[in-house]
Image 1 (spheres, helix red, strand yellow):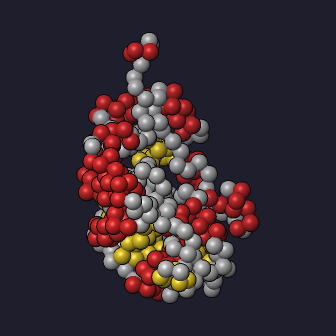
Image 2 (cartoon, helix red, strand yellow):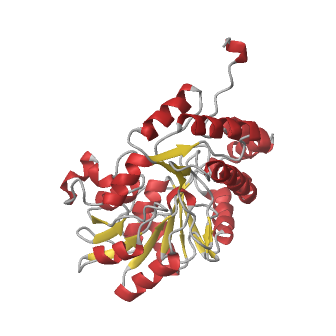
Image 3 (cartoon, helix red, strand yellow):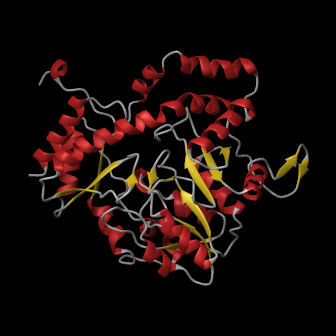
Length: 377
């Protein structure tokens, strides 16, 4: 095939198409910040905090420097201290458990439900002990865990409940929005997220006035007023440019998420008759936002064969995630070994994520499905 007739690569996300849809307003928003001279926090960030909290049906939002900082500051604001246990998932990006370890607390991992990839409620219950201070369920790939169930468990045991909603901006389940039921919820606005900034960014939602005040202090060196420091904090303030970009994108989020869902439905239909391609299940009452479209590829070595075929054809499939958290070298002293969480370990061997973003064309979706089906025969 000559270079002129080769199909165009299909990227995992198309930021160029996003910029084109936003049009000149994007540069105007950034230029407005530059001309204002207010580059950190300020009115753009305040507006975003107010609008994002309302969008998620929460009382308060606090903009911070990254999704990881959102987790760290939320844990500290909820009173998690060194030595405390925090129950979370072994199948997610490392930052979830890593944030726990970073503040000196102890990750208490619990296995997942293989069908959905989400932290299993009863496994989380079994992982709790006398040291447990907080539950940290992860809304993996943009699908909420059973928040009513986790809320009930937290209340029963007197634990804090922190949602890792890094991948779940706009997601709902049983009428509950991401960030609505937790004592706090941590979001990421990394550029590849459903709601992405033009660089690093994160946010924390809470319905508690006390937690809100703690977060405001923690992100600004523990300061309650200029040169008044009531506690030790850090520098984790959302930049004004990121606030302006997020303000521009937030009104588009529902539509962009709907487009992702439409693509996911096309993938689901294409793979429905396959014995070896199993899209992760959507729980009853769930409205995921498909930060990733993940399926299990069954059969020894078949997942890697399908992945290679996709990559060879310029289709940016990926493995999210190829190794369970407890098997990372950084987790070696957490007390878990191979076989500790068999469902998480199995999913790491089977999972394959296909391109999904709001700007995929029907032709691109067809190319992806054709390649997957052909290589999985």
